[in-house]
Amino acid sequence: MSVKGMADILPEESWKWEKIRSLFLENARRFGYKLIETPIVEHADLFIRGIGDGTDIVDKQMYLFNDKKGKHLALRPEGTASAVRSFVEHKYNSELLHKWCYFGPMYRYERPQKGRMRQFHQAGIEAFGVDDPALDAEQIILARELLVGSFGIESVKILLNSIGCPACRPGWQVALVDYFRRYDRELCDNCRRRLDINPLRILDCKVQRCSEIAKDAPAGRNYLCGSCSAHHNKLKQYLSDMNIVFEDDPMLVRGLDYYTKTVFEITTDKLGSQSALIAGGRYNDLVKSLGGKDSPATGWAMGIERIFLLSDIKNASEKTVYFIALDEPSKIVLFKLFASAAKRRNCRFDYKGGSLKSQLRRANGAGAQICAIMGENERIADTLLIKDMKNKTQKLIKIDEFGETL
Image (tube, rainbow, N blue to C red):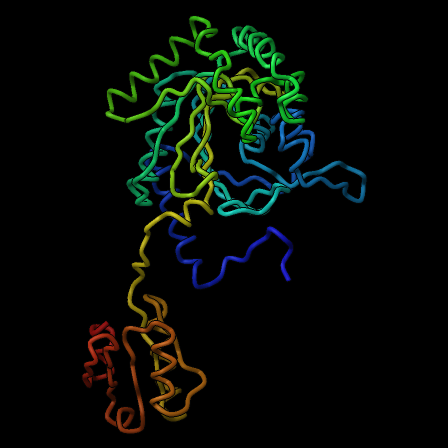
């Protein structure tokens, strides 16, 4: 039995997985994002410092362990902190624009649910070096293009907000504490704890009573400084000019502490409570807090399992040719043809042999569209019998015509 929350990707579905990865990388590269791969295992302190002590990920969900030398390590629960660690460690020039993308497994210890396992996969993009709302708009446009244009997920909604910066957010936090103190006994245990650590987390609570109370909480937009307000308004203008429909949601926050200014989610109504498909925003202070030079940054992450459930990607793979030999001498000749053809297209060779009927049955089970058949008569005449499995037709060709026929 596999470990709870750790799922296999079976051969019958892996083609779709590969297609999603390919489409993500193709779209990301068109926008200038280059692939980075970071280790699955990182120092635990990276995520504690980066994501934030007091968040659910750090307090409840991280897979933590000590190695043989006693170093405190973690399986990565998300991709941004690792990307920033790499940006800092390899001393990238913080004054230039760097655009990265990634695709890989993440780990969080939580109740397995539809579209989110304990080992799950994310694709994401990160951009370093520019604090410009046009870059935020670019990333949202790319996210929407992926979901709608490439994955065929039509029913999506873009939620947008600004949670301010260290200069203006404290005023909002004070107002939130004053408001939620009035409901102290009605909040869940987690939110009572969050009240003293980070009251913004209460706005993200999924407990029904906490959500009800949060609806009337002070909105962050009323506390934005001039810079944050201008950034947010300019972002909305860019999106509107591109005819991108969005909802300005003053209660939207993210479950990670590193965000500044822009936060957004792209959601669907097709997955119940697990509605977010892509989420992200700006994290202008994270590079500096993890030891690098001050560098603005922004990015998002996409849950691949949820995309897998919703996308209407079709398997448009090329036709598969199935090679059937009816005797041993023919097998030797046919195998040479198979090995040559497999360099150029999808091919399968029937190693079990047996009757023509049994081999055709296996070819059908393998999804073959064309069968190349050779028995004694065909071998003597230097011919092949080509059978079209879909149209139920067949024809005899010369062996030297095989490549041209395919």
